Image (cartoon, rainbow, N blue to C red; front, side):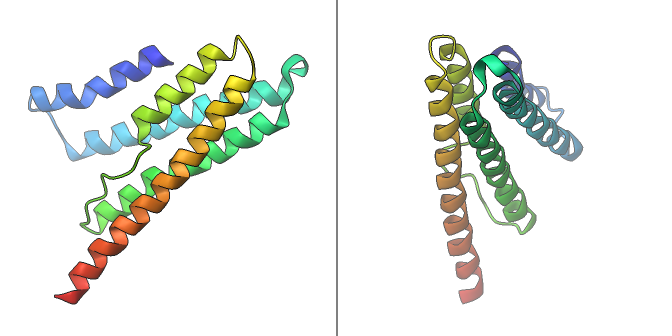
Length: 147
């Protein structure tokens, strides 16, 4: 997961560096990012729901919250950009979520409480980012109406 995510962070830089940026490429990249993030978090959810030896519905619930909150972070940015508003703010963008998830996965071999912490942290920080983005977009939209 961390290996593939590191390449994902390089693809945009490569496209810009070789002057091969396209609007479709940006949409495709964002779509694949959402799919890969959902797959990772659904994998965590399924692991803790369907493996009797590690069954923990709380981690599965937190994974569901993490999916929802992380998708909302991306959704608000997408909607803001469609309305010609800047929305590159927030404390928990995809790279931060991937690092927290990867750390939780690695440390969960020591104790499943690390996964609890990772899922809770992703959920919390993503929710804070949703609020930050909504406030940011609201302020921008108010400036546009004042003129």
